[in-house]
Image (tube, rainbow, N blue to C red; front, side, top):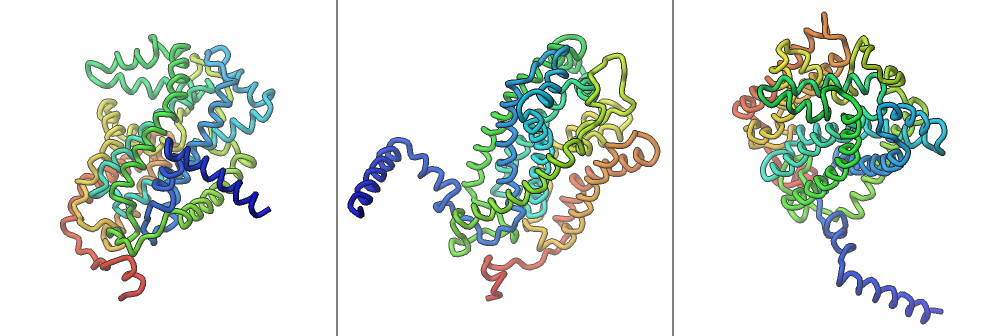
Length: 408
């Protein structure tokens, strides 16, 4: 028995070595997310959200392919095809709720991932390109989510597409041409729906490509850590099994909340108007985008001038590209920056305020608070970050990760 088992293992080992010598997939993965990739030993659970975001992207692609098999991208059939998925297709309701709420939870994971990077200075040298790719990922996600929101062809889908695409008309010279190109005609109609469906199906695979570049750019300088100091070899552990187990636990905890929403409150993050078929002759009383667009929507509405509002909305995202140079402090982590740490939490509160303002009618107190929030957003990015970096006196950094624990 032992001889047969040994011979069998030897055969499988030979097959494995033969394959690895020609296509070393396992060896490559071991270097990327396995025992050959050293990571700082002090990464906390906020570092889980990069892996969680990747997992949610996989969920979105798998459920999206299933939905695409049963969806009809035509203005007279799109709404009914979604209802057919919900009512007649086996487990169609589950696939749609997983996909619909998966978008929100994907953004939750990514936003936490971004705010973690802001707090711990993960955008600073030598990780600027890594940060740039992350911002490109955010833009690709937003484009994908917006186009996906149009596909059910309900009232909010149609009017959301009309309002958002019309924003480009504010751009001088090329604005109207861009709108016509997006619409495929002179109004939001069947060519628009077909274009958005095709792009919504394509862009997730562009996101996968950007994630590959993101991981590649991460592996060159290595992971940042909560202390913001470069980890020595003695302060690193293999990514597997230490962080693969930690990431698996994090995904499990995240899925508990995700499934709770999917099964018990699947429409909590949606809009009731989108269960009404699109009608170009009836404008909803209050056109509101999905919650993950609300801070930027609030910035847009805070400025009376349409062109300046559009530029401010896009500028609020594009400013992230120059963040590594706007932050003039040499210290990465807010753990050692007492002034910046307070301003960071004020900034988080400001983003939450803008989210609330974006969901309200643009009048009265919400409009005033939206303008204050929009002003503070750019004041924080363009003024406070460089000035605080120059004037702040940071706390002394430990010589190593180990010293921060042992004090030795």
